[in-house]
Length: 423
Image 1 (cartoon, rainbow, N blue to C red):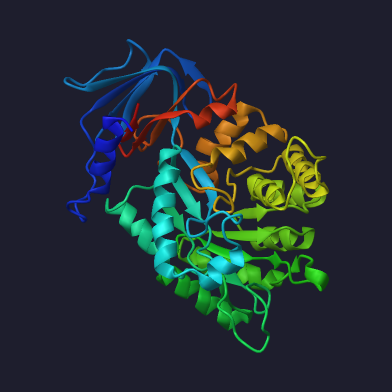
Image 2: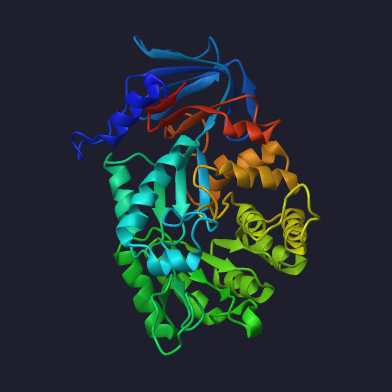
């Protein structure tokens, strides 16, 4: 590890003084070979950062450089906005290490939090400067505390949007088994008007930025997916959350669950495996985004024994590819989010690689991960390289608008004007 990385990590972690706030470094001029501004690629640009924000960006020689500014040459690199991960679970780790059931039922909370701190750091090092965490899966409101620790500079990590416990209908979620006993669950149960109103408000009061509901789940006959909440229950959750300014994300993989969630007014639908052209047209008409989580299904199928690139493609993967292409064809807004936690934190680029493999262009995938997710998640202060937005910036070797795999070659990370990684 280079001295630059060590120094930067010590600064941002503030280990010697845990509650010392992070302070942006001096004015900085960044000179890469290319700048992807969140929409398009530019060559021979430079970007100026001061006081935690972008102050100027444009062709070299046309941008005023502050006197005494530090100049960082990023030869061979592309500078882009920090990636915005739309679906993560910091309190989970890959299922080929420990099953979901065993993580929820058996792992001590302190162990899960310790893992999550390491996961947050790995996420930031991968160039993800903002992440929406969609449920602690049995770890209570640990995500709220991790968010605070990051914000206070106690530990490095992305800016977090958290959803706490998530909300499920009674009897639908897991872990399951031992019907005579009430097992700890991976989410919070709520049903009907009064219960839903109370639970939504309680989760918001405990620190949730987003409310996540499960519009369907694997509780049908023989474990098939089936709708859980009625459309009226979903609409009520959206109304109550919206009155406090919180948006709602819905887990949904069946056509009916997706239809109910869309008509109820959720902002994003997670997974969407069984989406039909009709449902995707409805989502497009309503401006509801799809977070397809391609990488989760890819990882789980490989955990089950599929040798990708050797064995024939399983029907689960082929069906996911078809549904993703149908969503693109319908004009559904796409949210970059891979359900990371099912697979390793820090491997966030895996989702973007699959989005390209399944039909997106590299440039469109990169837009989705930056300005697109900023728009979908209502983050007006980030996602583009323009003046007055947050100086959350990443540089990678190569040109990710041509080869999305270049995102794995992170050599520079800046968050709020503070250099985290410099190689």
